Length: 282
Image (cartoon, rainbow, N blue to C red; front, side):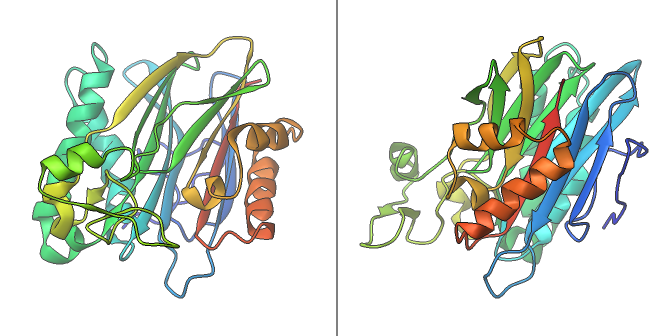
């Protein structure tokens, strides 16, 4: 497993810092774009299961900003695998520069198949994912499976760039595949009474009832675009999109902004691991 922490944009690999690196920052080689990240272990009695990528790389005459949050469950093996392999698989797609959306979809599904076939232990657990690829500081591609979320700030307004894949909203797909959605009092809806998301990497025992294809959205980065926030559901369970944007916009340094957001989520008694990346464009 790669344990390299990337600071100040000095990393040339497609992977970023391991979850054990709790905080850090970096910047673009070519543009006035900066990022910061902060990861905080939740109150649950298990090892940290969130991993991330935050890095700028140069490839084929382009600069790419690569950012991701991987929120694991039933262990950390699947998010650790995603951290090392998902962006590599995306950029290995021959059609990436011509048709990035189709390439991202294929790479997500190929990576999920690798996880499921790698060995029984790796495929047993699972992970959500939200990934952002920033091309030459101008075009942003967001993809996600599960409930880790991407929120863009444009003209001070929060724009959700990902879709929360929850069993209650994708019940039809789950039941069509022979699964069911439980609605136990006092609990969130779960696939077959177990998983609180309807799309995920891994989860071999539930895979016949789950999807791993991502929703993909794109945006142009213009003068009105302030920042991007990627975070696991440990943040979004206790904080709204606009509220997070309003907090982050007031703090010039993105690493400090990420720390402030995770600290606020803890203050609001979030129980989950909390991971946050803030990318400031201006």
